[in-house]
Length: 145
Image 1 (cartoon, one colour):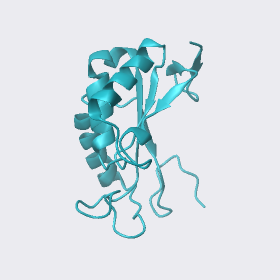
Image 2: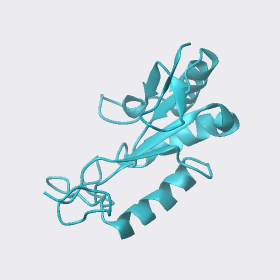
Image 3: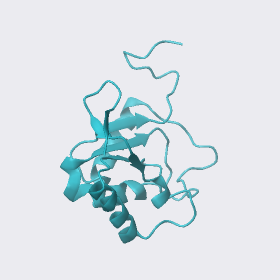
Image 4: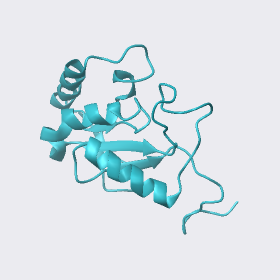
């Protein structure tokens, strides 16, 4: 499998990655958990090293699936997860009420990362991506608009 550098980072990933959303969210009924684990591990066996998930998929169940599948293979793979929504337990299937509320505030990011680390069964998240930003919440490196 060919590899690529991810952006300007030193992360090297397989040219083909596996987006895991559809295994537990969005496209009909969730896949059986054991079948999902088998599929993810088969991808690793075939050279895939880049796996994408998000806390909102399920919500949370996709990170659980990816974490369980990749825990014994963790040093061989790169995991990306996304954040940026306020997830409300007991709301619609996405965990949201009405239109998704965006939240990329620093205190929320810290909360999300702690939860994702537990669900992904890892001590690190290789690539943590904000789904949306809030115009009034700028980092020191974000350009003003």
